[in-house]
Amino acid sequence: EAGVAQSPRYKIIEKRQSVAFWCNPISGHATLYWYQQILGQGPKLLIQFQNNGVVDDSQLPKDRFSAERLKGVDSTLKIQPAKLEDSAVYLCASSHGLNTEAFFGQGTRLTVV
Amino acid sequence: KNEVEQSPQNLTAQEGEFITINCSYSVGISALHWLQQHPGGGIVSLFMLSSGKKKHGRLIATINIQEKHSSLHITASHPRDSAVYICAVSLPADPGTGNQFYFGTGTSLTVIP
Image 1 (cartoon, rainbow over the protein chains, first blue to last red):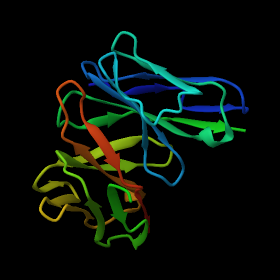
Image 2 (image 1 turned 45 degrees about the vertical axis):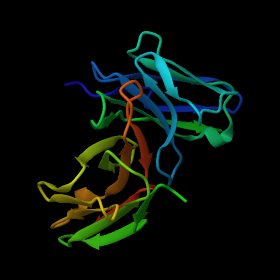
Image 3 (image 1 turned 180 degrees about the horizontal axis):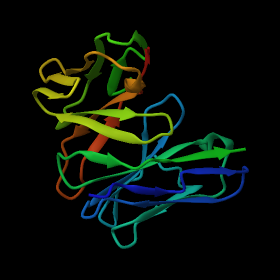
Image 4 (image 1 turned 135 degrees about the horizontal axis):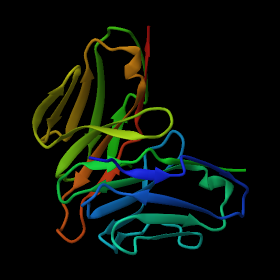
C-alpha cells in the first residue's frame, strides 16, 4: 500500500513569513497526527485528528499554528507568521485504529532564517 | 520527567558488534513501538509489541510489562544500521479518539566499518 505522503520535503523561509505543509495519510486511516521534531529531540505532538475532528491540540501554538482535515482525509498544517524556533522537521503520521501501528511520512524539514 | 526514557543517547559500535538500546516508560500502555529514523527525517516502524519478544532479521525487540522496560537488540551490526532509534509507547484509547503516543528522545547509533 502507498505510504503517508508529505510535501514539500524541504522549505526555507524568512521569519514572519507563512508556510503550509500537506499530508495525505494511508487510505482508510482514521487517525492523523502532526508532530514537530526539533533536532536532537523526540517528536512532539502538535495535533491529532480522528476523521475530521480534533482529538488533541493542546500543544499546538494556536496563535501562529493552524491545521485542518476538512474531509477527513488529507490535512494541511500552517504556520503564520513563522519564528526562528519553528525550525524543525514536521512529521505527519496516520494509523488505522486502536492499538495499531502509526505510519510516518518522510517529514518536511523547515528552516526559518 | 519524560514518560519514555531511552539509553544510551548516543552509541558508537564497530561493525559486527551486538548492540542493545534500552527503553523505560512510566505510564500504562497498550503497546510499545521501536522506530528507526535516518538522516532526512523519515521514520520507519520496526516493531510494535505488547508482550514477549519479536524478531525481524537481525533485529530483536523484547518487552517486560511488569518492569515497564523494553530493549532493542541488533546482532552483527552493519554501517547501514546507523540511524536514530526511537522508542514510543501508545496509550489505551477510546474508539472515538485513536491512540496517543509518547516518544523517547532517541538513541543515535553509529556503526563504524
